[in-house]
Structures are given as C-alpha cells and as structure tokens.
Amino acid sequence: DQQVKQNSPSLSVQEGRISILNCDYTNSMFDYFLWYKKYPAEGPTFLISISSIKDKNEDGRFTVFLNKSAKHLSLHIVPSQPGDSAVYFCAASEDSNYQLIWGAGTKLIIKP
Amino acid sequence: DTGVSQDPRHKITKRGQNVTFRCDPISEHNRLYWYRQTLGQGPEFLTYFQNEAQLEKSRLLSDRFSAERPKGSFSTLEIQRTEQGDSAMYLCASSPRTDRRTEAFFGQGTRLTVV
Image (cartoon, rainbow over all chains, first blue to last red; front, side):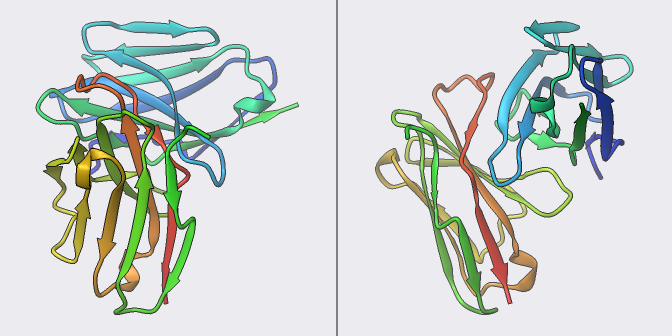
C-alpha cells in the first residue's frame, strides 16, 4: 500500500515557465512533508519542506502548497531553469517516528 | 569534502556471499539513516541511529541485515547470504539535530548487484 503517491512519472516544461509537481498521500497522521531533488549518480538533496500547520512555504523559486483536506501537496518552480531537470521526490513523516515515506518520484525535464 | 561519504560506490557479489557497506556521516551529525532504493521507486527506510543507538528498524530489515554505528560516528550495513532481491542502491543519510523536522543529507549511495 503506497502511502505517498506521485502519479506522474515524468513532466516536460518549457524553460522559463512554471513547473508543477504533484503528490498525494493517504496517511492522515503525516504531519511533515519534504521535497527532494535527485540528479543521476547522486544522492537526493533537500529542497523544501512544510509542516501540516501551514498551507504554503516559499523559498526563492520553489513554493510548496499543502491541502490537508485533499491530502495533496504540490511543488511549484517558477521560473523553471535547465538545471532543474532532475527527479523530484515527495516524502512524508508522522510525529511518532523518524521514518520518511517516499513517493516514486517524478522526472522533470526542462526544455530550452 | 564534508558531505556524507559512502564506500564502496559499486559492489557486485555472487548470491550467498556477505557484503558490508560503510557510511561516514557529516561530522557531528548525531542522526544517521539507511535507506534502500530500487529502480523506479523512492527510497525505503531501513534503519535509524541516534548517536550509537539504533532506535528504529523497518520490517524490510530481515535477520540477514545488520547495521551498527560504534562510537556514534561511521556506520556499517552488512547483508549476509545475499539474494538477487537485495540488488538495489543503498543510501545513507545524516542530520544534525534530534528534532525530526530537520532535513537529512544523503550520500551518493552504494549500488549493489547480486548475480
């Protein structure tokens, strides 16, 4: 049973436009969410996080939105740049433990 | 380089052999995690240390798997009697504080291939 789902395996976006990556979760006990980016042959690197007490968190070109009622979060990248081409993972945790539960990832391709 | 370091980067082993991976976390990070990632999937949690204490273990960690973190510094992950299903990328991560709302820093991983 996948508790964190990223239903789009890949996404192609024109450079300069907005990239929107989506993530759905099923566990209502999740209260902390993170996005990681991964380049080939490297480990994941942290991008941005959000606590369940917020519905938006912004850091430069990256904004994460959380809709708790829909159990949905999204990552917006504006404007998209060629260096943003990578696999993006959504991850979540609940208060009771330190495990991160990860989605399968979305490969983002930024076209010049 | 002051990031998380994993050794080896690649390991090919025959089924039934034992393998051991090493992870050196960022200096003074007291939390250390092991994850496993298979193709097309996100990382799956294996185990977590706070200093030298192993505090959480996933059901994925069968009795063929053992992890240690002596003295709360580097960590090793050993797989005994490897099986083809153990083929995966093994990722180590560390983080600096006990508050779980702190991002983890990942190493480049060890890719294990069991033939």
